[in-house]
Length: 394
Image (cartoon, rainbow, N blue to C red; front, side, top):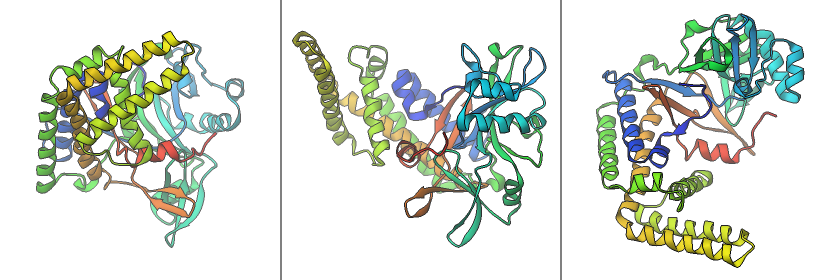
């Protein structure tokens, strides 16, 4: 695996990779369920997604043995690698430069071997807040506010630290240009110091809290069977909209349609209603595209493509409905597991509102198997927040 730049949502695999994507998503869900229940099965790693920012890459440059720090720009064609404070000022400015300056000052004693990637949690932006009658040490790196009770062990550690970071990816290679990523960072990969509250994103189910009980396992298996059934009924159409969809762009339009519900924080309507609503969405998108064309010929060509798309959809109505059903069933299966994993948390999580703080769940999780990784996120909750809550860093 190359560098870790972007992860896809599990349910989006059917739009990105067709039927094989659906099969991969189902296998990932089965592996996660087995892991949570202690039933063994295929090897899968689970990491917790922290809502940190920015991404930080740091460690020992294999070329010269010197410590460096940077953002994902370390992997750019013209890499921005900071080994001195002068480098920080050269490549970055503003809030980002300030945060990288902290990293360059405090992380050399934490990461003294290898190369790690993580998400910055706090520097000098911690706060003490009273929430629901309790005093917390809080930090909000992005959308979610994390909180530890002030007098708890973890609260005291965070309170006295100068910065915080969570590591999720390690790298190996002979130079920064050929690094290969490995998801999951063991605690042994970095050092603990009083100045840095460092943790690993690897999911740790202390006390077996996230294990599915009998009723939950039955619910999960029933939902997954529905997913397998609807995926089978998509026939060859799922592959057609994926591999042959450049003219119609139905895979892209499905993704935009589904995202509109996450953005609005609304549940998707039943399959038959969604089928009709998708065609309405498609009409609106084509109308926008037609209005942007200046010539009658270009407008006519775009209108013809719309008619072509509607003809294709109506000629394959049942399979189109099964694509929608598979997407929804994947979400339902995934959320059963996400809800269980949410019960394991070292910190409280809140979202800041105009009236104070509202309890929310962690951002989500990543499942890694066979060198591939996908996001497991309750998108109705977190993606809605991510779309609509202002970010908290420059």
